[in-house]
Length: 579
Image (cartoon, rainbow, N blue to C red; front, side, top):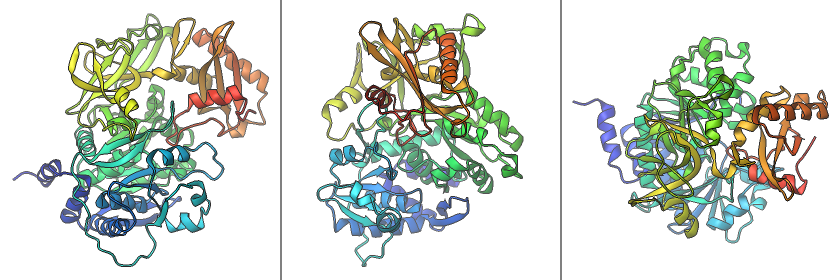
């Protein structure tokens, strides 16, 4: 007789929807803990079993049915925690399309709320009682929209019919994942139940996850990495997922590592900057007695993965039992549901040196000398049932191994398109490779190359590539040079872009945050000169302007990606918060 996991996965693979998946878990693992929520100090705050999540989601679905029609949209505005997942599954059970969103910061004037509301025309806004009437009384005013009705999912309610209103099918839209808008206005990616189930199975195979694969996650649930790769993947394999408030991690990253130890988690991860933060904020006394040998897969992605980050984290935490081969770089985006590529559990990262000069010619070749070397981190291979191609973005011709071009993807995880945006859907989701009319492809807008073994390496975004004097430069490389040039400059706090000059052509501008603790110690003119020298030496470019910014002034998306286009606009209008 096959093991329980094997029998279970055969059943799961044939399920028609994510709502059917939760009902399956409630029936087969009713009393096992599905999710555990921690406080901002790392103590256990709330838990929910699979059966209780199913019961509460079905009850909420009954309430939702009284307020909205099938296919209506509902905003999901929650802090990190169990209530968000109750709301998410309540929408699935009711046949309502959920729209996960970040709760805007009080003072933020740059959130995308208005654009998203105008685009998806929601009928409902779901949140907690505390946010609605207590801690954030300003929320309702910020989300002013005709016909929008607010519901607190945790508020006492009259008994209603808890029966599921619709049996979702694989082709039905499960939810809208709005793109972060790092290079353009947010667009609602239509994720179907089939897309989710296909990608969750791809993730399971690549990560080697089982019921024993407890997760610990601080990545917000409005972010696809937090929702799909953490919370929903744990549900898919029948494992538990421990949730930490994102702000608690940013302030005290050791809480994440301690929770991994406490819950003996097998899987945890986040964007590249998270691993740098753990190293930068490391205090031995905070990690006394910590054992990270349980961590079998530390996934890293959502932004360019840097070899130096992997090396620093591995070196620092090897003493705490961290296995270097557990580090797992991956690549994904909302338009592909989430994950596009990754390695296998236990293989470790693939890092190779390539020529800087070669990359500028769109070729990945060995460096000619030490000064020409740049470390490139592999982000794994195509997932099961998926294809990845490297394509010339101008001619749509397929490129060979080690040639840099646009990354195109095809598979059952590719989303249905953008909500009510036919033109953008056609341009992004219905591309065809020249001479290969048999298949449609997703154009990712990202640049990279495949090596002879099929390993994918990311080199940048098409719209972010800086072209000066006919040479291509990746902004991430310039930003890294800047931030490595002086300790007063904040990591992941800079942006490089170009502005047009009629007399001189495209000119480089760099904006860079200064660490809060260094603001009153530095001499800005000397620091700017130091940055200028580093850029000239490393990239042979003389910057047109270097602006030092106050901490937090650099525009970023809700998932922490640098908004270079917006930074450029703010620079042009003189509205950046300079020192």
